[in-house]
Amino acid sequence: MSFSPWIEIDASALAHNLGVVRSHAPGARVMAVIKANAYGHGVQLAAAALADADSFAVARVEEGLELRRAGVDKPLLVLAGAHDAQELEAAAAAGLELVLHHSFQLALLRETPLPAPVGVWLKVDTGMNRLGIAPGEVTAMLQALRPLASLRGCLTHLANADDLGDDFSRVQVQRFHEAVSHTGLPLSIANSAGILGWPESHADWVRPGIMLYGASPFAAPVGDLQPAMTFASRLISVKKVRAGQSVGYGGVWQAPRDSLIGVVAAGYADGYPRETPGGTPVLVNGRSVPLVGRVSMDTLMVDLSTQPDARPGDEAVLWGRGLPAETIAGAVQTIPYTLFCGIGGRVRRKVRS
Ligand SMILES: *Cc1c(COP(=O)(O)O)cnc(C)c1O
Image (cartoon, rainbow, N blue to C red; front, side, top):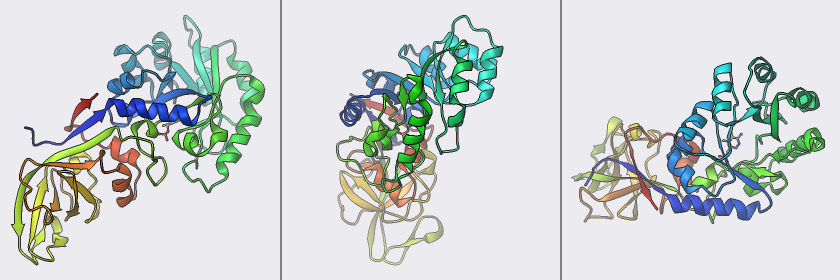
C-alpha cells in the first residue's frame, strides 16, 4: 500500500461528459479542449477516453506535437497559433491546425514557405480584448489568407459566459455573427459555460473544456456531469489532542474539546491549496470530516472525533467522487480549473476504466 497521494482518472466519466456536451448542443460538432495536460488529468488518457470527439484543441504548438508523437491523428487545433517560422513549419508538418489571432501571424504565413497550406481558424475579438483581430478586419484578413492557408472556420471567445445574469455574452454572439456570417465558414463560440448556459452560442462547433472533466464552469455543480478526477491519499497518523491544544503551523486551530486528529499525506506541494480554510470537508472512509489547522507542504489535518475507529492507512478523498471540486474551489475562492491544473508533479495518476 502506498501512503502518497494519487489522482484516479475515471475514463468512463470523460466519455459520459462528452455525451452531456452532445445532449446540450445536439447540432454542433465537438472540439474537446485537452490543453494543459487535459486540465491535469493526463492528455494521452483523456485523448483516448474522448476518442468520440470530432476534434481536439490545445493551447500551444508543443502540446499538439506531443499528441501527434503519441499517435493521436484526429484534427487538432492550436488555440494560440504559431509564433515563429519554426513553430509554423513543425505544426504544418504534423498536420496541426492553427488559430490566427494577429496580423503578425499572417506575415509569418507569407514569409514561411510550406509544402502544403496549413489549416487555419481565424479568431475574432468580440469584446474579451485578449486574442483576436477586430471584427472590422475580418474581410480583408480572409482575403489575404485565402492564397496562404486552408481556411477551416472562424471563432471567438466569451468573456462572461459563466455569469448567467450578464448579457454581454449575447452582445458578443451578435457582434460575431455580424462580423463573420457572410464568410460561409464554420463558426465556433462556446466554451463549457456557453454550451450549458447560452444556447445561442452553440454555432457549428463547441469547445468544451472543464465540463468534460466533470466540473461546472459556474459556482454550483451541474447535475448530470460526473467528476473525472478523484484526488485522494491516506491517513499517516491518528492521535489524540487535549482540549485547548493547538494543531499545526501557527496554532491557528485549537481543540475545543479532547479531539482525535488525523494527518493526511497530502499538502500544498501536491496541489491541495494552502489557503483552504478550516472546516472544509475531507472524506475519510467515505464520511465527511472537517479540515483543521493550516495545510502544510506534505500534510493536512482533519478532526476525526466523529470517527474514533479511523487508523493510519485509511483513505481520504480531497475532491472528486462524493466531494465535488466545486466545494473546495468555493471554500478557497477559486475555480475547479486551478485545482485540477495545480496537481503536483509527485502525485501518481491511476486510471479507472
Ligand atoms: C480553454 C479554452 C476553452 C475551454 O474552456 P472551458 O471553460 O474549460 O470550457 C475553449 N476555448 C478556448 C479558446 C480556450 O482557450
